[in-house]
Image (cartoon, rainbow, N blue to C red; front, side, top):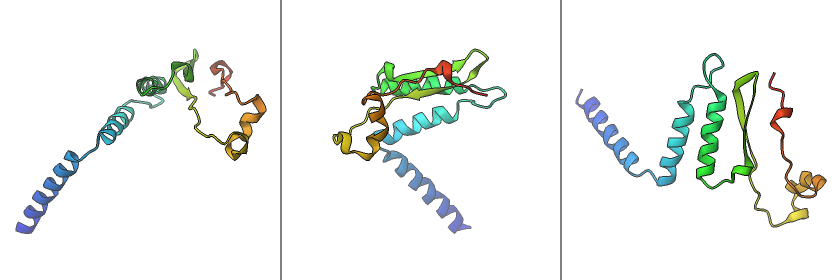
Length: 121
């Protein structure tokens, strides 16, 4: 019995120490994750659009340009929306970068997705 109590006390102390050593970026990630997990996205009563709006707000706060974030939904299913985000690349290799292949087809310009063309059936 003593061993069980001692084990529980040690586990509680270890958990407190681990929580005290959380870095700011870990705390920010946990807050974002908690917010998204607690957002009801069930088909019956939730809203994926709300989750997309919350994520877009976090991305704007982190410095992403509003022009690169598009929250979308259709009038027929306003709660079944989503988020399209254009994330800028950092490659300095240009044409030599194998990942840059698809961008050559449109002159290196990012393609914009028109949310009205999406079919969410």
